[in-house]
Image (cartoon, rainbow, N blue to C red; front, side, top):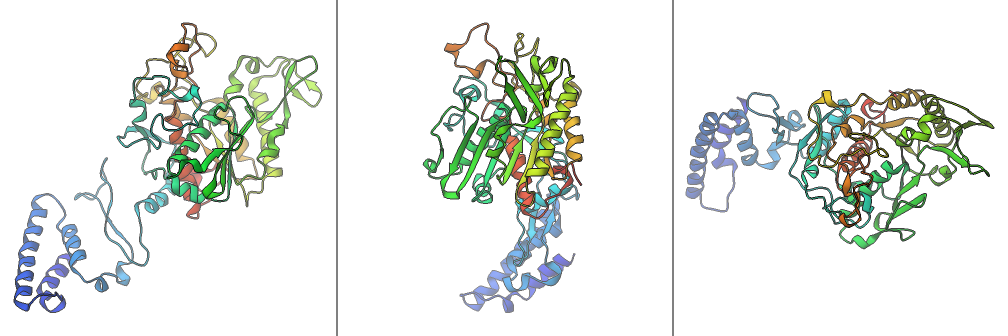
Length: 465
């Protein structure tokens, strides 16, 4: 009611406190009209089931002189929801009053809200906003990920946005992220799923540029499947977004007899390409499910010893501990922020990638959580290894959110129609671009934003407390 009293007091004394470049009679007429308008505003707000106090505060904020608005008791922004005092789906908070000394905006509010929120626990919701880069607009997408170019006819898979339970993720802002990355190196290290994420981020950042010729791949490549290192330079921001191929993170070697072994005790030799980066996003996972790796016969090696048989679970644990020891010994956590992206779900029906598995015709996500796959054993192993590390690792646990998205894979659209055959291998592991990896990068962006607001050790982004 104080706001109502403030309103009526303002209108009562308005002829003495307001100054207009018009004559006094007209001023009284104007103020009288405002009094009538205020009563109408008050009663219409009441009948419309809108809080009269909110209505009064809104009108007061427009009538009071600027010098009278700020006071020690009103130094924080007042936020209101609906008239019943609760937040409902689709109802956004709106600022009724805000201080001039410390203004708040929706992004900073959202970022502050993330500190107590698990951003990886949520649902996919329909969202009619445009993708962060339009289909067909980015020249740096591998053909195998470019479902639009390869003729995929449906587009609903582009209309879903990840929404955590209990908080809002700031929308991706490429220009703001480039400002955060100014003068820095961000490197993705891992398998082709990390290349999927890397291409997504390059395209999203490129879309924010007015002059798109100001970004280029340093070697001039347009296909990114054959070599082990690629780097995109954003000239105006003096930053680079790089990819280093390292599907196991540890070293695979080929002997003179052409027998391949995986050295579980040696980090891959490409580590010299990223040890001085400012941000590193690691991953490994899918190659551990391949037949040669999963069988574990005469493939895993430690020192000079090659195991006749070693369970893949034990081999994976050994490899992750080798990676963790290397990070702890070689990464300066005061300079470099380390991320590990979790396992990305596959959705093969009727077999695996090499035995006739398919996923074509899927156009909607899974909506029933009971239909999701069990949580992968690899992620539980990863979490236990990260928890023992000295270096803080920010864990992007995208496993569950990807498991819903059986509609997001290239399937037969990994190739143009003219190149397809009935025997073709469908891709139900990687993701169309634009598509699901754009949401991974939105979570990466939210994490970096939270860190820039002074919270480097939030529990929702790090296994370590």
